[in-house]
Length: 222
Ligand code: SAM
Image (cartoon, rainbow, N blue to C red):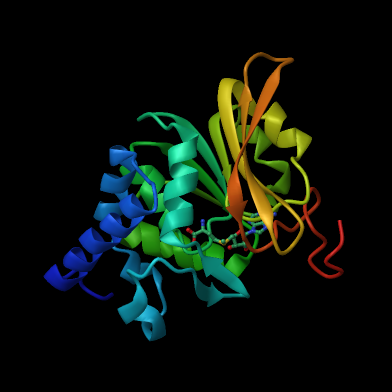
C-alpha cells in the first residue's frame, strides 16, 4: 500500500484550499477530507493526480467521485457524530471514509462485487469500521433502517420511495436525480411521517444508479 507522505499531506492541504475557493465552507467536512489519504483509493496509474479536483476510473466502468462532489454531498448531509448513515454506492470507499472520519455509523452498499470486495478490504486495512453490503441499494437496506441520513453517490432517474420510507423523522436524503448525463442534487428532509421538503442544490454528473429503483444496467432505461 502506498505510504501517506509529507508530499501527499501537502497536496491534500492544497486541495482543501481549492475546495474552499469553490465555496465549500464546512470546516468539519474539510478537516475530514484533509485526514483521508485519497491517493490510496486510486489505481497506481492515477496516483500522482490524486489531489486534483477530479473524478477517476476505479474499474467496472465506475468512478471515485470528484473531491468537490464528496465535499458538497457531505456538507448537505448536516452530519453529526454517531448518526446512522446509509451510503448507496461504496465504489472506492473514499466517501465512506470521509463519513467515518466524521464519526458516522456507516452502512454502505455496492452493486459491483469486485468493488465491494476491494473497498471492504481497503477500508479494513486502513482501520476504518463500516458495515459493508453487496447488492442493489436503489431500494435502500430496509433491514438495518431507519437511518438518520441516506446518501446516494450514483445518479437516480427519480427519488425511490423506499429510501424516504427508510429515513427517520428529521432524517435527510441527499441524492442526484436526472437523466444519465446531468442530475440535480436534491436534499430531502423528512419533517414528519407525512411531510417531506425538497431543495435543489446544484448540477452534477454521476454514473447511473442501476437496479430495481434505478436505471436498467443492460438497456439504460428505467
Ligand atoms: N462513493 C463512491 C466513492 O467514494 O468512490 C462513489 C462511487 S461511484 C460515483 C457510484 C457507485 O455507485 C459505483 O461504484 C456504482 O457501482 C454504485 N452503484 C450504482 N448503482 C448502485 C446500486 N443500485 N446499489 C449500490 N451501488 C450502486
